[in-house]
Image 1 (cartoon, one colour):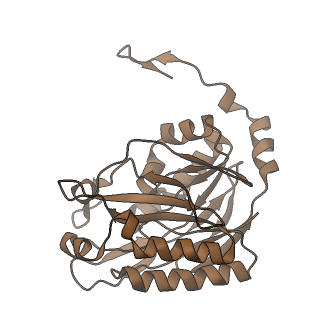
Image 2 (image 1 turned 120 degrees about the vertical axis):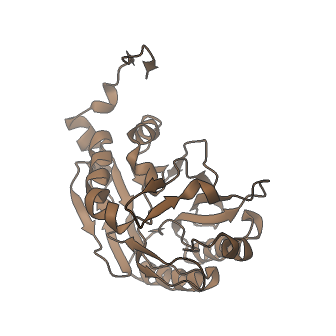
Length: 282
C-alpha cells in the first residue's frame, strides 16, 4: 500500500483548509496513494476559543468531515484524518480533538478522541492549556484495514508509551501520530519519541504534521514544527518532510513488521510486576 502524508499549514478558517486538503488529496492519489493521512486539527489552528465556537460544528454537521468523506469516496481511498476540532455539546463548552478513519466508500470506520491533553509551559512565552478548550478522550482505538491494523493516537499522546503498547498488544501494526508540534519541543523530542514508539513495538509510525506560521484572523498566532515522518518497524527514519508544505509518500510493507517482531519479539515478553509502591502493572 502506498501511503501519502499531507504536511499542511492550516489557518483558522475551516472551509479554506478543506479546499486545500481536497486539492492535496487529488495530488496524492495522482501519485499512487491508496491511503492518505492528514495532521492534527486539520480543520483549524486557532487559540481563540470564541472564534472556534463560532466556526466549529458538531460531528453530524461538520462540513470539513463531510467534504473529506466525499473526497475519499470519490477517489476510492482510505483516509486518516489526523484530527478535527469538533463541538461536543458538553455543558462546559469544550470541544473534542477527534481523529477519523474513512474507508474507500466514505464511511467512518473509526473515531478516536485524543486522550492526553497538552497542558505545558514550553518556555516563558509559550504556554498551552489544551484541556481548557478540549475534553480528553477515554478509550484507545484500533482500526482494521486490508493493509494492516491502525493504532490511533494524536500528537502529545506520543509521550505515553503505555498507550502505544496497548494498541500493539491489541493488534496494531501501524501507529498513527498526527501532530501540531511546538517548534521548541519538536526540535528536541519529535524524532526520538517517534522512533522509540516504533522500536518498542516493532510497528510503523506514520506522523503527518502541521508546519509553519499559521494565519489567524483573531487571537494569538501559532507556529508548528513540521517534519512529517515515517518510521520503520526497526526504528529507521524512512521519510522526513522538512518544514515546507507538501506531500511525502511511503510504500508500506507488512513483512517489515513481521521481520522486526521476529528479530526482537518484545511484544511477547511483557510481564506483570509490582511498582515500588506495590501497585501492579500489566
